[in-house]
Length: 317
Ligand code: MTE
Image 1 (cartoon, rainbow, N blue to C red):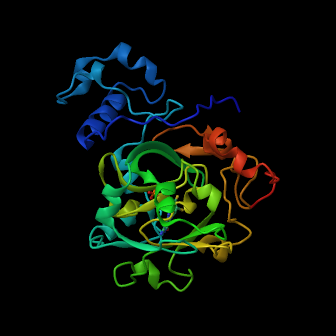
Image 2: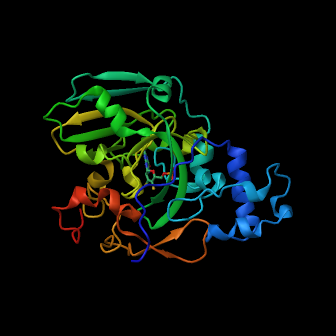
Image 3: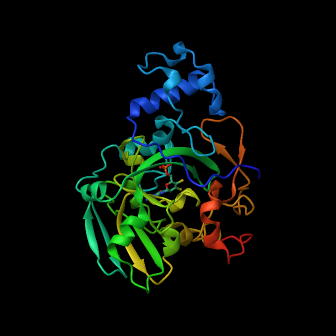
């Protein structure tokens, strides 16, 4: 693997309105440039910009730190995994359209000095907000680049003061079968739950996301608040969280309960360890025609490899 690893993802200095994001992306498409964004400024025909008000040559291209352009708002919001609504990716958006996301509270409890239940409005204002353009690599071997808005999970955890016994963080999705028809399926142990080791949770890359492309989080992407852990397979990034619990026991997770030999607790992106039913060496970036190599830790090794220094990464965890 020869991809350059940079130390931090790109952080736009401000949240850009969605129409500006969209016009950037439309321009990228119109110019026929889906990679190699450096070339963009040099070949910016005004007509490719269509009716967009801003001059194309002044638009910074929205890319991750490897130079990969962000997926479109449409791609990100019309192809979703959210089993509470449907196992059909295209059906999630219409089925979640009327999902009630307000009022919403997030309880943070367990082995903490200061347990607290936060209203979603508080979470939007209490912590310094960040914009992070992250790759999301699904265990099913497709991927996207998504511009999230949110705040580091560590800010929230520090506020509740984990005790010295706390070793893990458990996350729980809302249980509301009357609105989420998929929760009627007895095959899955609802509510969806996930977990991280506490030191993983404290890593700056792990965020609680409340929006994307500068918009409030769409229901299908996990409104009003979801986890994003970019170095792990997408199923770790649990949606629509109502409870976070600090604990000294490794949490059960929905997928490791359903199929323990296929979905481990750690689930770090690893091109060298195949899923029992398919290869993890490459992936299909949504919007691209050819497959690309999957990167160790999804390309975030510089920031997270130390967390696993004592683990044999050739094993399936
Ligand atoms: N969270 C919940 N509660 N339910 C789910 O079905 N699917 C996971 C993850 N979080 C899922 C979830 C999977 S498999 C992936 S790949 C990502 O959400 C997809 O996130 P996206 O739809 O925002 O791209």
